[in-house]
Image (cartoon, rainbow, N blue to C red):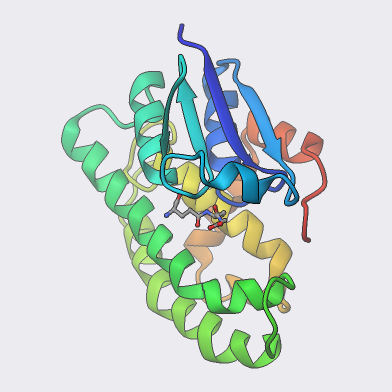
Length: 211
Ligand SMILES: N[C@@H](CCC(=O)N[C@@H](CS)C(=O)NCC(=O)O)C(=O)O
C-alpha cells in the first residue's frame, strides 16, 4: 500500500470527500490540515497553487476531482466498468461546476469577501441551485439502488454530491428550503449520512475553520 498524504485546510470543503473516501476504503492516510497563516508560504510550493493536494509515495498532484477519481479507482469506488465510471465523473464534475457558480455567494457568506450575502444568496445561490439540482433529481429518478449510477454501493460521485449537500445544509440561511423541491436528492443525502463511516467522520471531525 502506498503512503498517502492529503493536504487541505482545516475545514470540510473539498477535503472531506477525499477524507471520507479513505475512511470508506479503510485506508490510512496523513491528514495534514493547513492553517490560514501557513498558506501563503505553502501556496507557491503546491503543484497548482491550490488545495487539496494528494501525495502518493511523495508524488504530489492537485484538483479535487482528479484526486477523487484516482482514489476511487484504486479503492474500488469508481463503478464496475469504464462507462459507469465516466457517468460518475460527469456527475461529480457537474457538482463541481455548481460549486464554482456559487463561489461569489460562498466567499461573502463565510466572511472571506465583503458584500451583501443576503442579496447574493438570492441573485447567485438560488439560480445556481435551480439550474444544477434538477439534473441530480432527474438522475436519481432513474436509479435502481438510490445511488447516482445505480451501483450496489456508492461511487465517488455519491461521495462528492453527498458532501456538498451536507456542507450546504450547514451554510445556507434557509436550511429547510434547500432540498424542499428536490426530494430524491434529500433521500440521497439521508442514505449517504446513514453510512456508518460517513456518520462517524462527521461526528468526530474538527470544527470547521469558518462556519
Ligand atoms: N478546482 C480546484 C479548486 C481548488 C481551490 O480553489 N481550492 C481552494 C480551497 S477550497 C484554495 O486552494 N484556495 C486558496 C487559494 O486559491 O489561494 C479543485 O477542485 O481542487
